[in-house]
Amino acid sequence: MRLMFAAAAALTLAACNRPAETPATTEAPAVEVNAPTGEYTLDPNHSTVTVRAQHFGLAFYTLRFNKVAGTLNFNAETPAQSTIQATVDVTSLDTPYTGDRDFDSELQNSSWLDSAGSPTATFTSTAVESTGANTARVTGDLTLRGQTHPITLDVTYDGSHSPHPMGMQVSSIGFSARGTFQRSQFGINELIPRAGNDGVSDQVELVIEAEFTRPIESAPVPGNTTREPVN
Image 1 (cartoon, rainbow, N blue to C red):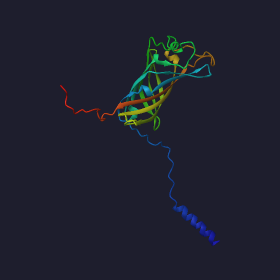
Image 2: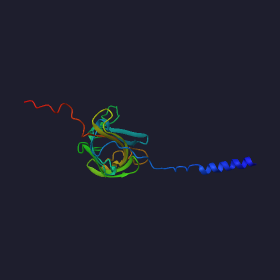
Image 3: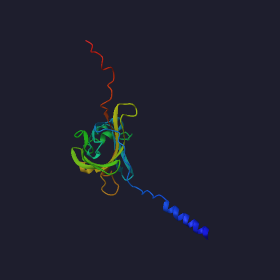
Image 4: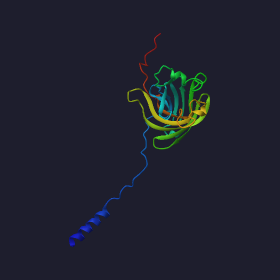
């Protein structure tokens, strides 16, 4: 009996001396940003703009625009104060179609993208709302076929470097974004379903992968800059 009381006392003493458990936290860790504040230019060789629309209820038909330009005014201290402007060359549309028709050209006619009358589409941000440690909701104006309507993009900050790991004297920053809009708002009404899945969906999804760069201002100038001028 004494042994049982002694064991119980030892367990009680151990419980009293046990350190308090650290309460669990749900806060996401701070995201490191290795890019300074300033104006960045879109890197067209490492950025893509793709569009998806459901095709007769079977699958999502996907096409890509190969020529994109843009400017990011990035605020590293207060990212929500950043702004972006982007331009897409509508004539650079690229589909996977391999048949006898020139399907890329057909989608640029007046019934679809009307690239002859409106050769570019633009997006200009109007507001940025932080939604997480590395996510934000970016609202802006999309202009397509000469018509402008607001859309919202869900944006994820993917990473940044300064300088670039490959030795280039640039600061780099990258984002992924997704959003949807109704193509009928912009006058694209061809094959919109009348009932069920008898056409191509009115709702279109944008999928964007974007890398931006800017020169590092303190980077050394190549070559010998102290040489005397030659007459």
